[in-house]
Image (cartoon, rainbow, N blue to C red):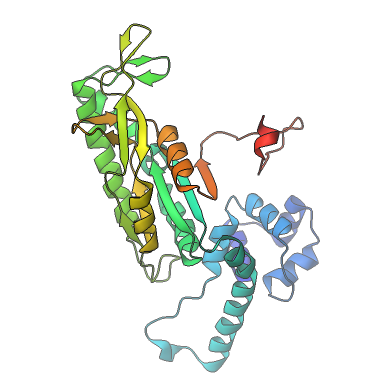
Length: 308
């Protein structure tokens, strides 16, 4: 862990003293943490992650040793160093393994993350969660991709009370955009670049018609046409894929028993899926500042009672 912190700090041109000032810690203790002589508490790790504009998961992933196929280049001292670093990493990760191993996470994110190439960084975190045996269900959005295709086809987007009016032409753009996003995500999750956090990753992605939908119909005199809402989630089908150690990927599309396709909201699919699976965590990755307290500080967690 210390090596990952040091590498990230140096990559950003930040001095040890500068990092210490940002996190309110002693520079000497930070130096010992970077050398592996002192453990890093969860609270301090979060502060360091924020200061370096990264996440604890990415630092954990970067701490995982990667050994070249040509193992002969390593002498015994280097092997001992990597062994020690792995032990330190494993000890740090053990609480997370016990806490989250076998749990189900539903993670929802907008199409902006894929469109702006942020998903490459997210794949490293997902790979780490999968390695901790977390059961992952991903729900993606596709709003910017849909808007781009409507603009390309010279079609004007139509909305009513925040809901897209999806006519036949818009529905074709919705299908095309969601298909492209899904393929992009599957491709990125299939990466196995050497000497990267995805090296040796073996993530299998499962998609399917797990979402049954129904039309929203006419609202305030406006026919929303192919815009719908979730009727039912095939929880048994999803659980089977998770039991096979696959990552389940859901698009904001649903299908009716009569063979119609409906444009759904990312939030509706994610919440309905989390409820159907009795998921342990429902996580939304947003581009907003998040919920803050009266002092303007980010609230990292909140109970349902506090939210009310």
